[in-house]
Length: 554
Image (cartoon, rainbow, N blue to C red; front, side, top):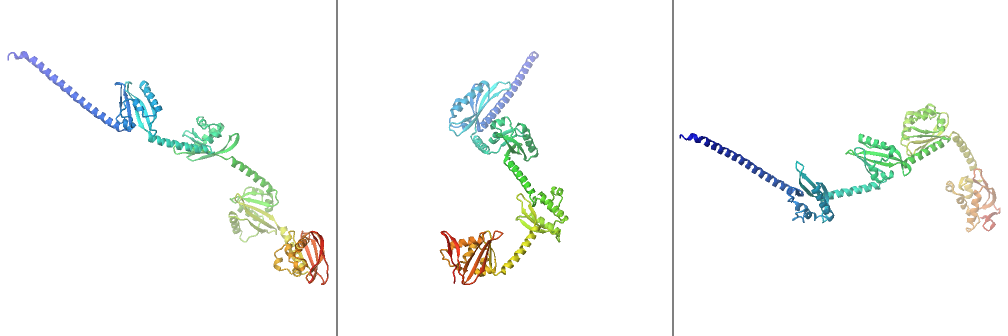
């Protein structure tokens, strides 16, 4: 025991060494276990990522720069289909694409490996039914060193089909818009031109792509800001804005109605109508209206035109003079109610027991007028006016007024004279017949009907002289073959404006005929009953000369 203190320091050092070694071993074992756990976790994550990648709708080929190996995803065959089961290189994979697309893919992959240039290609399958998208990108480490060059493949056949369909519809729509003779365009939210059809480009004498590239406005350089101002107003108001402007198209000055309509996405659609024809028609219509106004102004008939709102739109001097209304008042465009009141104040209207009711009735008649109306207005001063009101083609009413006082007085005198003359003729012993210029019987007396035994219903209908004389055939000794020629001669003698006389035998009676042209252009025939037994002849012109004929004596 005496020697123990000598070995104690060594034993203590050994114990410390053993404890330190054990501690170090423990620490390293712990780290090893942690590393193994991390490695296992990473392996699991890698397997999970690999599974996710294998189930993804895209596949990849990855070239690792550190190992210089080309790896493929597990779903490469599932995505690209038959022909890639044993593929170990890009050349093997490119064999399923058309030759041209395969060459483009290989060239793009070489550029990616050498320069890191990314690419995206559309590749057509050899079967002609499928289309793939290839995306090449380079992955770099934090220090900028290249890690891998990866090419991703994705089947975009369905998307491409939808895209192709949309493109065809767009082309069809563009074709339709180009076929329209109406300029159509589209603006983005900044009012820049993004589309125009062929009519728009033709109006500017350029191509559509040039018009879009140069932002050429339909209204031209001098009025280009006006077009954008219209679009700006439409954008701010949220509704269509319209203005009409003149532009030069094909060397001719044309009037276009420019329209800008905002869309929900902030863009605007515009279109323009050629209003030149309407403008020309409007100018022509204005010219005709002015010419008609000049003609109406120079007429002696009083004329006034009311608009659809029953306000005075036109009157001539004869109207103002007839109604004795101040022209300044008429020029102010008064309505019909005020005109009636002014005429009543001047005592230029008939006296009505209930004037307010009459005025309302007249206004209703004018507002709802479909057919012309005519009436005589007997004024307090004894004059009579004839009013004719007709619907105006543009709406409203056209009124004409004529002072017919003298004419009515003359008609009354004439009618009185006619009645006196008719009464005189009716009491004559002689038969009298008056034929008009149209050869029709205008007047006859009872003696005429009695002499020739004519029925009243024949004479009351203004028969032609041929009908009347044809009924006299039985009173003449003329054969049926000769009668048509004689009839025409007698009709001419009865209606011509020359005097003639003769004698004829009418049944048992002798009649003396006398024809004379009346002052009014009518033919007057006078028949005088004679004595029995006289024999005489008339000379009647015939086609072969003049021959006599005798009346039949019963």
